[in-house]
Length: 509
Image 1 (cartoon, rainbow, N blue to C red):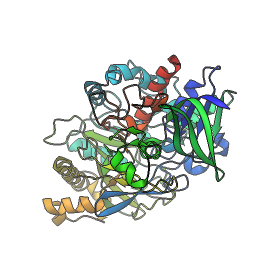
Image 2 (image 1 turned 180 degrees about the horizontal axis):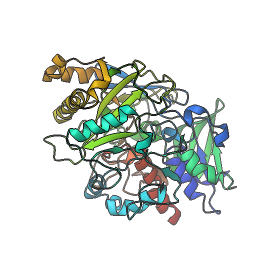
Image 3 (image 1 turned 90 degrees about the vertical axis):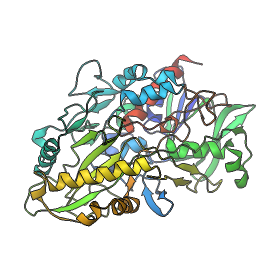
Image 4 (image 1 turned 30 degrees about the vertical axis):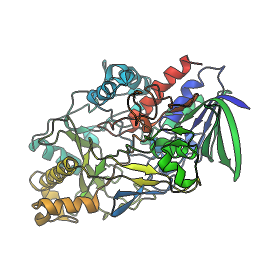
């Protein structure tokens, strides 16, 4: 059977595309997912619904090089819903400056004014109202109420206020900065992934086919046009053909599929015996991620804490000496149960409390490359964290802010001893830098590996409509296309990208 649209990857963007495109009953849509599919919430495993994060049971089991001397685990969702089904359910938007920067770089369709309607379309915000927010969208958004915060959360909030951070109720207001509850895609304790928010209401459609446990190997091209996908299903290599092909497999898998298809830089492809079909040197380059580092302490015994309450609030702030608004985040993570992140090795004592700075505007750039033409061999992921001196400077400052919040305010009497830092390290620039090189890790937000840009940008892989340059009928619609990372957890932006692209694709042949 030939399909009108084949979408590879049922994650934060792909599930959105499939749901929106199949609203047209005359369009046959095939959605391919490498992981399992759970057709109903009642059938969905606990780790996808009510944990803080799922770091193993539905994961690709990737590793990445944080820097040339250190490898880290690199979780990515492998299930219908993708990483939206396993993440920490923070529903945070990028800033207007993020999207206006994309537009200024030649992608005018992605200015804040033009993407705002799609941010509103995707959400059902139960707390915030007004011109910046949506109602009745597929993704439920709600903020943890102060009465649900635990004593450690209240102390963290009070410590931040005492340190001069303003109070924020709506972190998604374009001008908000300071400390307050995270907006979360969580309803009645359940993570609202794109599998639940978008695909569940669309499953009855006869023109939508969802196939799980199907691993995409490459795009089939004929006469300069994408006409299908080579996949592996139940151990058998097969081909499926369609009028339009869209890769929504994420910032790791989508560029890998492109490269296996002969789309990329000849210097990357030729050593593997891959014939270059389309010379696009930007494929796999421009890898950007948000790094973070934990300052960990054990709590004073006897302070009550509901173990199912974790990370309800945080700080967005501008680093000292920076001219980039909200270029930093600060989390507080409370680990009072060992089942909050199944499959993960957080290497933290239970119980423990961590204050965690995270860099939101990294200047360092990494790279993704193939190790093999075999689709079962994971690509090489080089993150290159903190390579830029300004990245290191802001994270050093973030570690010291976290240390002060834990020592000088109302949080201090609640903490017994520090696990991984000493005053001597904190007071030495070189020692903090060494600590960061040895301890920085991912906030799980890779983007940029098939970035959008105008024809004048030799590193652009797709145009502003997400169409792959040099190949008719082929798009990339996911985190890969971001030319720069947003100052926010990336899930909501990926959902918005799916909505934005679906609007164009429904109007085109």
